[in-house]
Length: 239
Image (cartoon, rainbow, N blue to C red):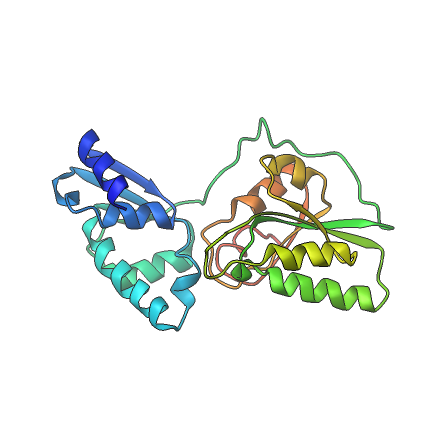
């Protein structure tokens, strides 16, 4: 935080546009924010702590509710977040609901490829967090494998979140790979190719998202998606 603040102090911006929870918190807690002419933040979901009932979760929501009143404009990506922010800041705050994120359609082009029913390829692409549904995925695949279902593969591409309180142990994923339950690829710098290689993208997050970019990318590529019934995910699904 301090390094970020020092950089802002050095640059001396008159306008700040912030995106994602981490950046939003750094901007909103900037001691000299009141001297900046305009600060615009985009709520891309409020993170797993927003739904936590622990002391840390409650404290996070309280602090965020106080800090968010300092900005001059707020954009949310879905109705759920807009209503949640309205409850925190009241009707006077400038608040706008956008149509979510976007993808470069010149890069993410629809794939004209059918599905091999004899060996469907399911997969997850994202941060390796429990709240992203990784434990549920492992449990589900384990049940299917023990029942003798072998007509599918499940690929996991993910960024190891070392030190994160919600992190999934990569050791458990490596072990699941060793036992033949999943195919663990580790981190990828090319999510487009990862999603292209799938038939179905799976995102069973346990908390409210903004609008997950992986779902938009999968849709642009013509891949199917299975998601949990949570805000941000359901906005992307038509049927």
